[in-house]
Image (cartoon, rainbow over all chains, first blue to last red):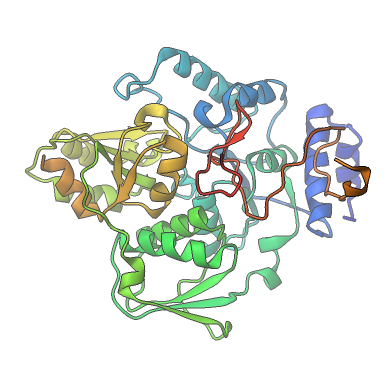
Length: 375
Length: 52
């Protein structure tokens, strides 16, 4: 059983009201399940379960019962539509009303409705910082690229941690669980979306283990983001190492044909930005679109935070007929349902069929742009 | 089902309360994000062993 300090005991006894008491009960229950010795303070929280499409009326009802304030800076996952461009996306007014009601409930708790799966672009966690984040690709990036420490939380446990300002000390908060246990060797070059394809393939193989990689060229942060997102979607990898250390004895070598998952079959729509595009990715897309016109719908998802700082890039992109949308993505929005999609993301490839009923294929970023411009 | 086939399984409690229903048993992991239809209470994941 966990040791609780005096403050924790008071919260559990209801001294800060029933909402925080319930939140503490969730944290204590999880801590006991996972053998945590105590609760530790967190630097920030990040909540999944935001889109009306995924949480529905039941989620809205759950949120409506919550009052009070979060104890730490807290951000949200993408919602079901661009806050302003929802009509362009073909979203119905009834959906918009419910979606905005959800956002309002979260904001009343003091949560910052940044609505992105890339919260680290908005506020980068400190190295070694303990967090309670729930978006699987953000968890992977925080742990693996930024050196922070978070478990792969569920929406409710991240919300509970946000309200209390603490999380049970288990899993990836502890050094002993941050050790790689399988080594993946790739001795041919990879670039861009190849890392998302690699993530898609490796996630299924390693499930929830901690892989370390040996690459021909070190991947950049965008590529690491794609790799982590893919593995977190087909597996539940929350931590990986982009460089080989000396630890794991189990070695898996992959060949080019293992990653042969790209398709050139023609989709109804092309959607990029899963996870949300960084400035460098928007720059790449703008470059690929230069002087061209889209002939097939091309949607690009990013955070409003990044978009607000890349207005020049976005103008260039949208001049071609492509559309940049914020606050949302192709997976949690109803906008792309039942339409066949081409994506440049291993994560989107995994979730497209189940969450959108969409026939989904994957290409590289440049083949995605090419297929949007050629009909 | 005969009484002799009843099994007592101890779970790990997250949320308090009492519930009752038929056990749905699987040996495969199941995601409730996209794998289950929350309105109809059925498995949507066509690759899952419980899918009908």
